[in-house]
Image (cartoon, rainbow, N blue to C red; front, side, top):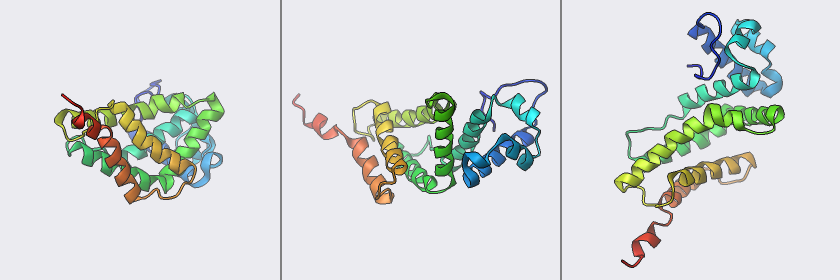
Length: 202
């Protein structure tokens, strides 16, 4: 589903047409990067006119972020019902796997477009990261509340340490970004400081 921040102008948009635009943008960006994912190419691929696309999105950057968000939401579900530590571990593993394919290429391209257009990643944070981060933080907080996540550190810090480490290693091509590494990372972060807290004198 298109992002709620996409601007509503004119007649209500066709969800089928909007989905076609998002899918075309994602495919073209994954295969050809920013050079391949021009608005003209997206129009040709989706069968939706340039005028219509600009009625629904402010520009290519917003469209690419929404295309990325749609695919990431499909590929990277984060369970709000499973045990929290298990949910975070499974999500982190899925993220690492997805980064090795099209999702990783599109994320790098979207961030490059953010920097080229605005000099920062604020639009990406607003339209995607803040939403996904809020969900992940809520899962970690639930684990802290029920005692299954032992770290007393703020949930935001735990989330950022896990996913920031994964992104850093991926972005710079560092080795050992695999299942064993992610399992150890999640376990260590979610238990961080627990031993010290438990041994503290009453």
